[in-house]
Length: 278
Image 1 (cartoon, rainbow, N blue to C red):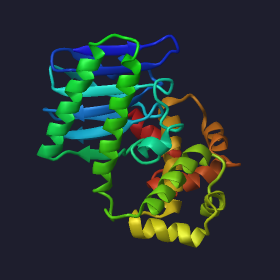
Image 2 (image 1 turned 120 degrees about the vertical axis):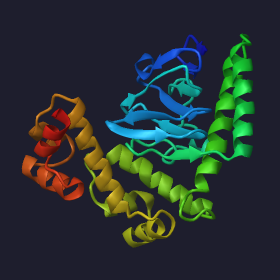
Image 3 (image 1 turned 30 degrees about the vertical axis):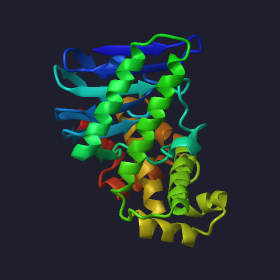
Image 4 (image 1 turned 90 degrees about the vertical axis):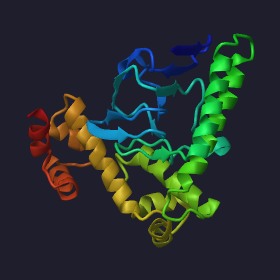
């Protein structure tokens, strides 16, 4: 079962239920954000070359940056997808607080697990989506956006429970989200915590303390992992040579990038490329 919405402004939103069809992620516009829900079956899928097992009742959120490898047939897997023209999570960040949290360019995206009670709520929301897709009128797009926002808000609330500190104050949560967004925008040219702290108008020490207390990860590690992730993507999916990759990630010399990459991944870029080719 497949439902699609598209308007004259190139806004796209789709809902796909793979229980009675064969679905391949390549059929979705690569500019779309995607939400994969293992409604009643588990599934193995690839994100940027990494395999992830999505268990029954779990949701996974991917961005247009992620290379998604997903093929499923006759399984109760639900895929929601939408492009920025339909709903821009960056422009409407204050409404749902999901940007920089649910949606990141990471190869290890957040997985949201639902309790039986939450599953009932998401099943009901799914029924509302189907009803709206089947109701074609002048406010159909607006109604679908309302439902999408509800889906995102509910997912953020559930995902926050899995943070190291469930009771994280909203202000601290927003600092972490804003930092993640800044890293996503500037990791190619800004490699120091102090550069992001300046933009956030906070001291590097205070920023590190927020991450240490509420995120169990240092801001420097977030920056380093994002640089390495992009390096892996470019090695795996692009035709750039090592010098071009190094330069695109803010390194003046390929040797500097190679040393950085090996320090954080345990392999040189050359060894990584050899391993994925075998």
